[in-house]
Length: 324
Ligand code: CP
View: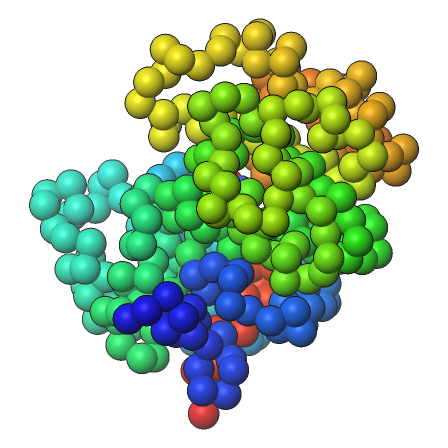
């Protein structure tokens, strides 16, 4: 199947969401509707969370073959708040450790009438491979795929930017860090390109730079101060040490913070109303200083809050797509 065919596999003939693999291939109106729907699932922190019966009788299985706090917890909460039955497979205690293949694990859970598989894996192509092998009644949601795609993170980042800036058009967005291994940057880039005419600046040290072919419209640079200057949005990313074989080539944490850390001094180069984002997990005083992470411009906890609402909207969308 060619790339276009694969992207089309996300939507059914009526244009409804069957699977979520990446943001590329979704339209601006489709994403706008998802974000609007997510906003409708929100209540303020400190109030009871929004609940709905939309997934009553459905079963959602979380299959995380890589560590996660935010994505796994928010998919679980999102599914429970929509009244689904939720299975969190403990991968280290599962029969994968006895040699069972990924597909046999999927077939086993499918036989138990799982409706939605939420999948995180370190290998590229795994969520899509599962879509090609499940029955038509089952949906697959990509919860983080190698360095390729993290679409619900992209959606929650778009939602956070839209809430703070009132628009997803005409913005200057600077992302700093290990772009080479970042599925977060990939999905944000896809989303920003769909939603408007935005300027994306990607800052990284030598060795962690983006592949220019993956970001044909972005500015790729190692000059952090220039890239932060005048930005509306500044996002810091951690170095993904788990994906880097030659760790000896990396700077020390202190060197990295001095040269590429998002500090209060650097943030002053951005627009005065710029927001600070980080997908988490944060390494304080490495890629972002504590006072910036906790400061008045930070929307890091807002990103987490939005993650539950976005995942509720996505779960609702794929469930409705299977209704007659
Ligand atoms: N942003 C993100 O994917 O965080 P987790 O790895 O904790 O899920």
